[in-house]
Amino acid sequence: MLSVVVPVFNEAACVAELFSRVEAAVAAEVMFVDDASDDGSFAAIAALQPVRCTIRALRLGENVGSQVAIACGLAHASGDIVATMDADLQHPPELLPAMVDAWRAGADIVEMVRRNPEPLPALRAIGTRAFYTVFNLVADVPVSPLDSDFRLLDRRCVDALVAQPHAPGFLRGAVHALPGARQAIQFDSPARFAGTTGYSFGKLVRGAVDALRAKARGKAVVVDTYERAP
Image (tube, rainbow, N blue to C red; front, side, top):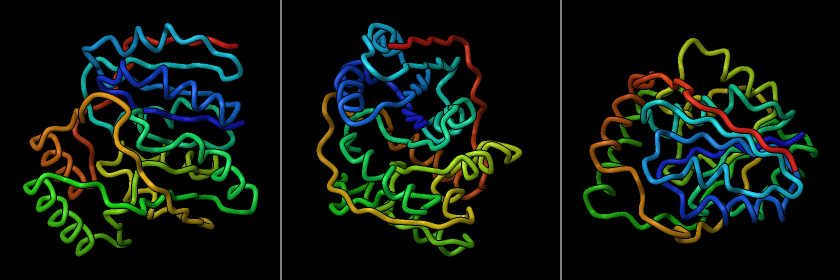
């Protein structure tokens, strides 16, 4: 069984389109992790009408960032394989079948690599380059700025991440450190479906510090859950 983990922060305008496209691509358990949204995202998730996918949702008590939210979703996902993707549709759900095919062909970790770099404001672009330069100087395994949180993991890899004593500050680095057969698939990342990014420059700086410390800031505390089958 495939689980799809989706961190959500103020993405009420995106979740219906995302879920519709996931259902058109695969039959799966879709695990939404609402990272303390204040725009009605959790209610928008509860309003979805599943046809062939099971919906599961977790609502966190405070905003802890996408990395901790994804790690929380991994801990609760029940699939034999687990894909992670953003809610804003910059990670095309139509690529999920190709990711599953790569796993069936022997890959334990399927990493989706952006073919087209995301255009960033000047200050954020400078900060991103600086972060990856510093991170790759101190990390055992290098990480590319073209990497993303769009990936598929075998259950053994998921269990290894969940077994870590604390949520990783930078999940991409933790995934790169996992053993196992890997396959990279390039993809073109479209523009956001709706809204604007919820990650301010301050949040990005705090996230970078957590990543370099290899430890996440805050802990995911689930305050509400929702589940609906077709």
